[in-house]
Image (cartoon, rainbow, N blue to C red; front, top):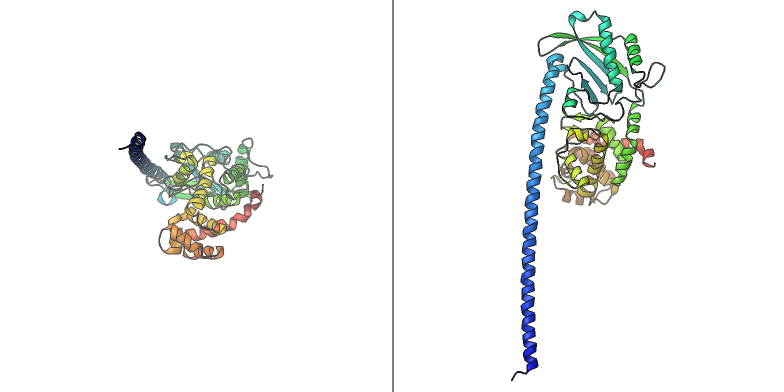
Length: 400
């Protein structure tokens, strides 16, 4: 006969087992709901990313449409072969009616002002001088928001004139708002302007009156100085050598805050909205969104995301590379062509993991040589050399 104590123990045991089974069922239910919740979150995030991607596509199509319209308006007066637009190293700004333009070659350090006149008016020197003086004055103090395309993109003016400290009067004084008019008058009176025949798409023949003037010899360093403090701040925020950031900006835009390329890429560090800028924004701010030219033309935004993108490349894509210099070489190349093409250089396919393993078997010099000779595009091979050669130029700024 079972004793009372044994019955109590048996009942307790059965209750414990029942409780344990219930607990296991509850836990399994919790895990199921958690998995469903995670899956739901993943679905929601995927839908959000798809919506942002669609927004980027719509943005890109509108950009293309706006640029085509802009170029057609230029060609209408200047002709197809003379329709200059801004590039990585050249800033080109047209007047509202497209009959004048200002341009600066930031690599060579040469500025140019051009006005279109009817053939019958080329002998009216006073009128031409007045127009040239007005456009030169605008060029030397402009902040980069007067061009019709810039206005349409809501491109914000930068803090200082684009040519601040880079143009001097005849007696060596910096050109400012206060003496811009005087500088323009002197330049026009002393210059022998050029005349070039221009046939527009509208069928009219016009004469382009052209005046050029040099920037000061150290114009690149002066522009770099304008962005020095912020570039240092963002480089150190991501634990990146400031010299690398300065060298990338130098190579990407020659410190031209209004740089743009056909990628399309925008601003000092030439970020592409749908790729590098998007990845960097997600990395820096933890959310996905449309990064516009308006945003990227603001130097502080551009340098923040540019430094952030270098951080993505070095500490996410190429995190597994043991040698720091090898990692820097790969990040420089990837900044121009993407991690997949860098991987392809070492293993013949766009898979970073196997490439990292191959890279870790090489010295940093061997990595550089492999990139220099086997990267898929000559542009990227040259880019790697230019950036690495320019890093020492800014070494003193890395110590400050």
